Every structure is written in C-alpha cells, then in structure tokens.
Length: 310
Ligand code: 13P
Ligand code: SF4
Image (cartoon, rainbow, N blue to C red; front, side, top):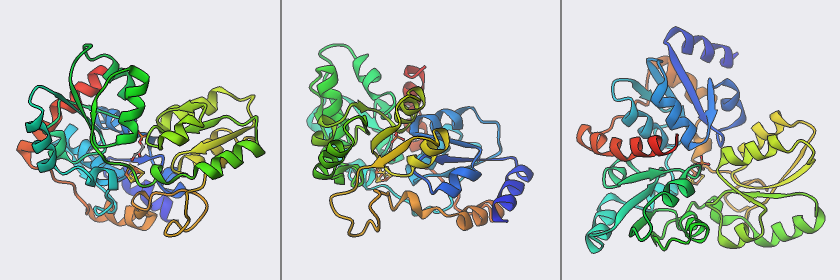
C-alpha cells in the first residue's frame, strides 16, 4: 500500500510528515503530526528530523524553512498557494507602511516570506487575540491581510487596527442563510466558527476560534452530540475520529459552483495527494527555498510570535 511505502520512506530518510487539518483525510492519516498553522510552526521549530515534508500550502512550508534554514523542507505540490496570502504583495505592504510610518505591522501567518520580512509580529488565528491584546494601549497597528480576522480582533480587544482588505475565499463564502436554517433545525447544536469567516457568520456563532481551538472545544464537550461547523471541512475528519458518536453538521458555501460538494473545501489544500507525497519523499522534490536575506528578516517576527505564544 502507498501509505506503508510513505511511512517506510519517512523512516529511512529521518523525515517528519506534517499535515494541516485541512489536508485530505488520507494525508492526515499518514502524517506524523497534524496541527493548525501555529502548531505546525511550533513543531517545525523543534523537530530533529532531517527532512520536513509540509502537507499544507506554500506559506506553511516557507515558514518551516525560515525556522529551519539548514533542513530540507519539501511540499508535495509546490504550486499549492493561498488566495489570502496572494491578496497582499510585499510591494503593496511596503507602500502601506510608508503611508503610516509610526505604525507597527502585525501580519497573519498566511503571508509570503517577503511580507513577513516587512512585519513586526506574525500571528496565527490561535494567538492573534492574545498577541494584539498584549500590545501597549494606543499602539498604532497595521493588520493584514485578513480583514475578517482583523475586524474580529478589533471587536474583541477594543483596538482600532487599520485593516488590509484581504480575505480567505473559503471562509468568506459560508452561507448565512444556510446557517440560519441549520440552527433552526438543530437548536441545541452549538455553532463553531473560524475567525476568517464574515461578521454575519461570527454573529450567528457560539464559539469562535482557530482550527485547533474548535477541535479542542469539541473534545472538551463530550455531552454535546451535535455541532454546526463553519470552517474548512477537512477538520471534520479529526473531529469525527476524536468523537465518533457525535454528529458534525458543516455549514455549506453560498454556492457549490466550483466547490464540487456541499462541504466547503480549500482547493489549494486539496492539491496535495498521497501520490504527490510519495513522489516528493522518494525523489526529494518540491524543495522550498527562501532567499537568505528575506528569511533572516522574516525569522524575527515569527520568533516573536513563538515567544509570545508560550
Ligand atoms: P489555522 O490553521 O490557524 O486555523 O488557519 C486556518 C487556515 O485558513 C489555514 O490556511
Ligand atoms: Fe488560504 Fe483559505 Fe485555503 Fe487557508 S483555507 S489556505 S486561508 S485559501
């Protein structure tokens, strides 16, 4: 079986296979480590493997490479991008900074290495509230690229960060009408949403948190037998494994055109397949390279994030 061959190759090469919760179920099952964006960065920072295979999108592999410049970092499909990261080009951020010289820059981890290099502190959805909340009152902040996450942080912390106008096309397309209907049909089911969702979805939710936080919430409430989930549907695999007697009801996207099913899937995350993982591990292809100077500058705000997340 291809899964056995992947495991054997990983052992032979002292490689660690990491996977984001939005990866295909079969990739999650073959991985050594599954996590959200923060957990993947933390694990990369401390692994003693010689090779890191990052089953996620490109910025995740890039972050691992910046943290481990001496290690070989591979991604099964190097073209797996992110619409959110693509919405903020380094030159545009540089121009925004120039217009706001006395502002600190806080960037979501869903950004390129070049954007991180222009950033003061990186955050993920796991630690953004804590990190922004720890900034001195009155600190002027530019936050990007996710506008929905930035608005959510502003409303929770009372800050008035200036926000970049980007979004994750997956989280932005959940249908509020479908969620209202699901809530009517299942009034006892709590609604769990990712902060990349639109305000209207957040307002209809009971719990807002990162992928890991939502999974933790489900595990901590074994008495609840139904949950409504508004995040990328890859997380359902781990939720169902952890709580097999619980029903998870995914909120569908506004339109299923181009999505293919009633679940809301990120097509970039799904670009990695078992075959691509096998080939990349066998031939050590899909190596992630980051310009040395940019990597050096990008490391500082990532390290600040890891320090502030302890
Ligand atoms: P987290 O992994 O921080 O939950 O972010 C979700 C996401 O959209 C990753 O691309
Ligand atoms: Fe990017 Fe959204 Fe896909 Fe995450 S789910 S990789 S933020 S497009």
